[in-house]
Image (cartoon, rainbow over all chains, first blue to last red; front, side, top):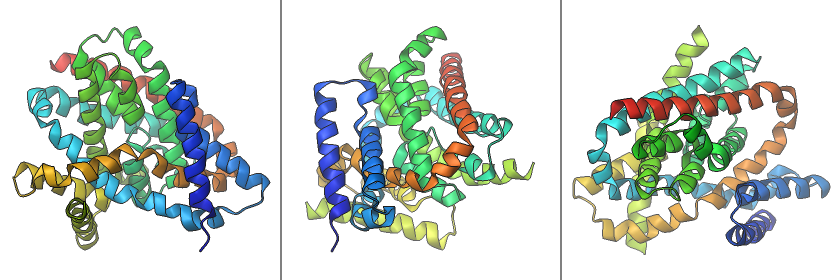
Length: 226
Length: 109
């Protein structure tokens, strides 16, 4: 069996993850750096993606059980969900809708193709869920993954200054805005500011993933018909 | 360890089956996650039986995005052609979403 892909992915990720642990800078995002270096390597070595994927797909297969496992952090924070149920439900539903509609319409107005509109719509959802949703609605899952990660990096790097710029002070509001917009990478940043913001951000991320996967297919049908 | 994995994969399987049989446009793994939350909340599943395995998977999720992410190399043409709508939508949608969501939640308090 060809084990090249899984060997390459784990080794490269190990190196960049180590680097990130030493120097926690947003531009050293280990996933983004790993993807970029693997692409460069495959390109210069003239190795096809399918050959790489033959064994690397074992890693992406694990996204299935990993998404199911998101139930555990969600369940553990059930008290926070109940304590702030109004803000969380409102923020997830309205924020989730704004995320989809703003991405869809800006891309549309700037001349984006049908394929791009489908691909970019789930970009605020946590990567593992976004990949599945993109697949279901007919987008390009691998491109969705990249757009999601870039959105996460934006939240991680400039999310806090933007929240300050909009004068958003409430800790729950800051956490939700970050989690709904920039999923895990945003959560990792806001948790350094405040514990409650971080907990709410993680919830916003998980619940927006659920919300978007339930409505996006139907919403896209409506958007595409007008 | 096998008990935890058996629980996770059972719910994954049930979620995938539900998506398939119900002909739902929702990823089966998301349905599996919802069913597992219900199972935990309803007391059918003890969190201690599944916590360790689930947290291992969640904590190590990042590496799982890399292989699908590398797949973007097949779409460089599309990326080049649609660079403007991609960059425009990413930046504008980011600012709009984070700003409005924050403001809305503050009002809801």
